[in-house]
Amino acid sequence: MTTVTLKRRGAWLDRMPIAKQVRQSVGVQRFMLVTGIVITAVFVLVAIFAPLLAPYGFAQLRDANGIFPRQAAPSAAHPWGTTVAGYDVLSRTLWASQTALLAIIVAVVLSLILGVLLGLLSGYFGGPLDRVLVVVCDAIYAFPTLLLAIIVSIMISHGQSGLWNGVFAAGISITVVYIPQYFRVVRAEVVRIKAEAYVESAKVLGTSNARIIFRHVLRNSVRTLPLIITLNGTDAFETLAGLGFLGLGIEPTSAAEWGYDLQKAVADVTSGIWWTALYPGLAIVLLALGISLMGESLNDLADPRLRRRGAASEVTEAEAEEVAS
Image (cartoon, rainbow, N blue to C red; front, top):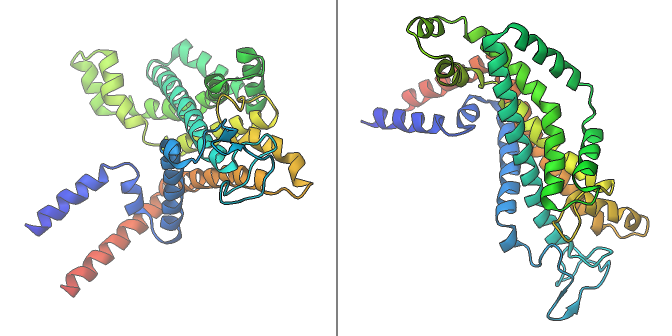
């Protein structure tokens, strides 16, 4: 009875996102993966609960006691100090996590949908469509991400962005650059999978191409995408921060954004006012570190040798438990 319960619990855990990879990882690899997951999860929770965690609004300049002082040092009223414009640094940093999360979601969703769809069609049907898409995707690799983001930002809002304009400027530029990566990975898998016996059998039975693609081919061709998704997410919020630092990002009255706050804090650093740049910069570094650790760990876990090591470790642990019992 206990064995059956444990098997059911293990099967349920394996269906959880990333849970199977955590079980496969060992040693330093597991530490890196868990650390990345924890850091990323903390930022996601902060983004969701920012309205509850932040003591003030992202554009709030006064409260019941009056107008906030400018460039005030950390205090009880403002634990992380205030900026040159009088904004509370703690509140701006917490609220900006929402903006970063939106940029990541937009970039990942757009890139994933378009890249996977084009990869499926190109790999399955081949022919002239395949050749054209391969050439176009190879050419897109020449586009610098940040330069493309600047052009898109100017086209969308003439460099003065609201929340969604800024998010979509970063998201669309990242989408254009990352579509070829999703496309190439999915296309290579589809070319391999469409030669499998079960796909040929489905064709013989008269199954439509759409059903074969989305029911049989799709589910088996997207297993190698987690690493690209993490890289995509990292580039998305870093590009948004880059736009903000260059003065082409989101206006402070529309949303909080780490890059904008860093750009306004550059002059403060030379005056000994460290708190206005420290916390937004630290947030960017930590979020990039968390997503990168998670992505690198998932990439390493794709190595069959590491999977065998993980399996051998699990067998050893199970044998030890049996001996102990």
